[in-house]
Image (cartoon, rainbow, N blue to C red):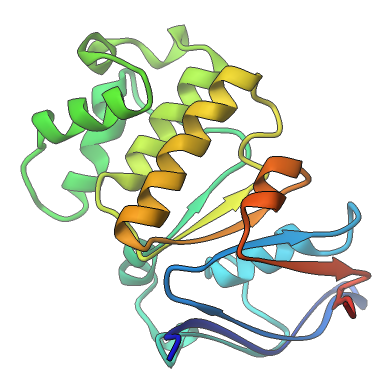
Length: 216
C-alpha cells in the first residue's frame, strides 16, 4: 500500500479578502513525482509555499507523515522538506560558503569530498568550490543551489519553476540528477511548472485553476 507523505486537507488561503486558494484536498505518496500545473495567477506557487511552511493556510491543514506541519519545528521540517526557488539565491562570497551552510546548521564538519562529488553530478568540477558567487552564470548558480539543497537529501523537494529561466543544457543537467534521486532513493518531488518534459515525467498531474483543484 502506498505510504502518504503529504496530505492537504481543506486548505484555503486568502489575503486582503481575496481568496487565492479554495478548499484544496489531495495527498502525495512517498517517492511519487507530482507536477502542479495551471494558468498563471491560479495559486500554484502559493500552494507550494504553504506546503514548504513558508506561508500558513487561512483554513485547513497540511500534514507531513501524519503530523500537522504547524506543530513541527520549522527548522526540522525544512531539513526534510526542501524548497527550491525559481531564481537561485546564493550568499556570502564563494561556492564553498554556500555548500558549508547545511553542515553548519547541523553543527557538523564540512564534507568536502561529498560536496565535490555532488558538484560533479551537476557537471561542475572541484575548482568551483572556491569560485566567487558573483562570477557564476545563472545556470551555474542554479546548479550550486540545487547541490546545497541535496547535500543532506530531503524526503521531499519542492520545485517552483526552477528550470524556467535556464537554457536546454542546464535544464537537462538538473533533470538528470532529479531523475536519479527519484528513481534510486525514492525522493518525493513536487514541482510547479509549465515545462512539458517535467509534466510528462510526472507520475501524476494536479491542475490548479482559480485556486481550486480542477476536475479531470
